[in-house]
Structure formats: structure tokens, C-alpha cells
Length: 314
Image (cartoon, rainbow, N blue to C red):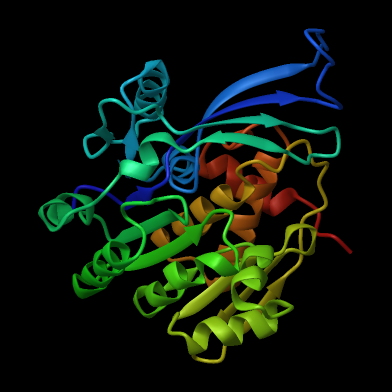
């Protein structure tokens, strides 16, 4: 196979500024320390990080026909991502978000849905987009055309071809449960935040959420718990809680995407479970220390060293 991972789903241009304490009145100006542009989204942020971590990564998503699309494709190419499966859709804007990052790391957002609503993967695309041993679907809930039965067929075909499937979403709640639950029998690793897991399932706590999703067909759940670390549960009975690293948080944008990328990279390298969780958490910790989805991640070796040197919360 040509690629190590195929990352399918939501691609967004993020425009981030920090620290934003308030929006100025009328036409006034407030001065801030930093503004960045990043490729983001539950697929876009993940594919950049897998590429930085050394994986041969295929991007599968959509941009519009505007100047934002030019920048997204250029930046993906700069990181060595294969963009041959990216769709450029005429007449629509590239999906984009303005994030006003608060001093405490909160990030209220303004979002244009754009091209991701028009992105689809047909059966004719399967040979190309499933050309990797690991297939990641990210962004369910904000992929209007692909969400639902099309995503079920895509993941089912990936599993039929012997691929390892990983799955994450964005901004999910109880109203998106009908899109998420049918996917789970075709998912090896379901990797939402605990907040998303609770909102969809109606359960509280990682243990109860994991039982819910395992019963719905997922092979394993890997929940990010923010400052409480990560939780892993497998249908074979394996359970593991991994405590968080002690870090100074600048911006939490893209931390879940970085965790996904770290865990996918750990799968690629056949790391044991504890090391896989630690490596994924180190990836997320690096991103949390800077502004934007790809902040802090430099390379596989640097992330491995970070994993070994960071202090675990007591």
C-alpha cells in the first residue's frame, strides 16, 4: 500500500487569535499577542500531525475554490501530505473557523460550514481512499453528504479489506447519535472526548460510556478526559486509565486531533497499550502548549522524548 494512514473527513481553515478577553465595541481595536492560520478539523488537524509524526499520510476531504483552499492545499503539501484525493468544489467556500482564544484556553468559535457539507466518497473512490492499513474517519456531524449510510458503507468496506478503522467526531450531541451509533460495528477505535461520549450516550463517566458504546458494536473506546487524562476500554475486558501530564495550557484547539494522530502513530509502530496512550497524550500536550491544531509537534523522535520527560499529574 502507498500510504500508512488515510485520513477522511472534515478539513477546515482555522484563524486563531490570542489572548482575546473581549470583542471591542463598535469599530474599536484591541491588540493581541498572536494570530495564526492552521489546517484544522477532525481530519485536517489529524493528517497534519500524522505527517509530522512521520507517517505517509493521505488527505481525503474537500475545499472550495477560494483563496482559503489555496492556502490549505499548499500547507498540507508543505508538511508532505498526499493531497491527490482532496476534492476542490466549485461555487462554495472552504470550511473555516474564527477562534477567539481566551486567556484560560477557552475558544469560542465562529464557523462557516462550506465545502465539507458537499464532500462525499463514492464506491468508485474506495480503491484510492482505502489505500492504507489504517483508515481514520473524522468529523461526523459536520459532513452533510457523507454522514449517515455513506459513512457506514465506507467503514464497512474498510473493515472488509482488512483495514484498522479509527473514528472521531466534532461537536456531537444527542441529536447526532443516529449518525454515530450505526458506524460503531465497523470501528476498531472510537476516540471522542468524554464530553461528546456523554452527550451522545446520555451516560456519565468513562466506564458507563464505554459499556454503552461497546454494546453498540465498537471494538474499543479511547476517550480523552482533558485534565484527567485518557481512558481505554476494549470488548475483551481490558480497561486502562492513563493520568494526564502536568502542562501549562495555552490553547486546547486541536488537542483531540493530536491525540488521534498520536494514537494512530502508536498503532503504526505496534506500541503496547500503555505506551500508545502515553504517546497520544504527549502529542496532545505538545499542541496544548501553543496556538493552533499543529502547535508543538515537530517529529516522532521529539514527541517520543517529550513522552519520556513530561511529568505525570500526581
